[in-house]
Length: 466
Image (cartoon, rainbow, N blue to C red; front, side, top):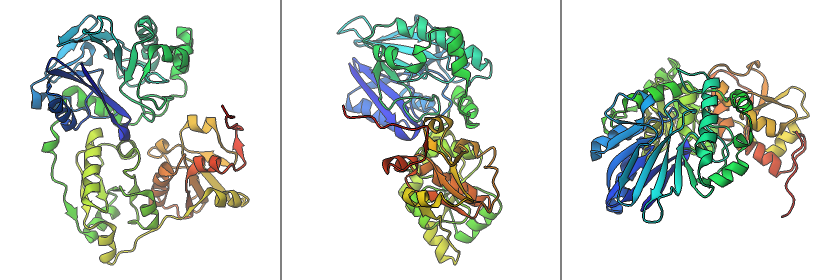
């Protein structure tokens, strides 16, 4: 039996290809499906089946296009209300091809329609050796319970407790756990970096599985939920009906610098997709930095929304093509065009470029003695609670779409995050809004800790040898 995990780092998304007897199933496909077709051809497999563990909210699935290009059937939980051609599945549904058996286990909680797939290699044993858990069980965490329009977070959290304890934790300790997301995904809070685990490991180490009572599980799961990006509901809607083919997207057109400037002046957002250092050195005034080096599409969706029709700024055609693909993965398909010849084209048109001042953590440590300096931490609440600078003020980046920090636009600001990516985004948004006395902290909190500088709360003790 062939089993392959595909991991999309920018969305922290895992999908799977399972093959046997010349046939294959794809589970939770990403928007661009060519890599599944290439892998299937390489292993002489024909994709006949497509499974969705639930209606994903953080990305647009390629299930409909993959079905059209292969003739495969799509299988999804019966509570999904899917409107594309599909097969509803529930507890007890099994599918066999070659030596592979896939068995459906309904596991509502993250969403009402969530399912898990038990994978058996009949050549080895009738018992399952792996379970594809979707967003029900992650490595170190469980799915968030606040993505339904029909159930309250408390109701879903209770359903999730039952799914975990009455179904998943009844599996053998040796069963391998393969989730649909990893560390960094917005669908959970405390995921570890590993791409797989076992039921035994999760039973012992997953914080959510240590909570004994159903009532306490519900209480903890709904407390301090991270903010839910507005585009999540729209992505779930798109996935319920099925997205169109990527080949149908309109052509991305160049825009001369003066016309581009007019659009910016009219309030159209422009995303600079280059590296953070390049943006800091010179950028189009008013551009929003969201670099391809990080979770580009998630932040674009969270901060701008799916209907923002953003413009793009890049140095190369390759950057533009990658940006377009990654934006389409979260449902941002209607782009306004791109700056012809990038920042160089802007400069050649006689227009001024802006810079973003930066300082390292040693310089920040010296500057902290200035009474009027505000240190703005744009990490998430959980990161802040694990450790932060005593003098810092918390304003998570995901809040920026609702409101900017309540500070004077002339305030002296030093902005930091974990490593510098999110703080550069935050600085670009602040500059666009008229804040003019700010500095980005290179390397962020990680660099502060690495330099062993003082002033961290709570006191973080480095692990000893061994």
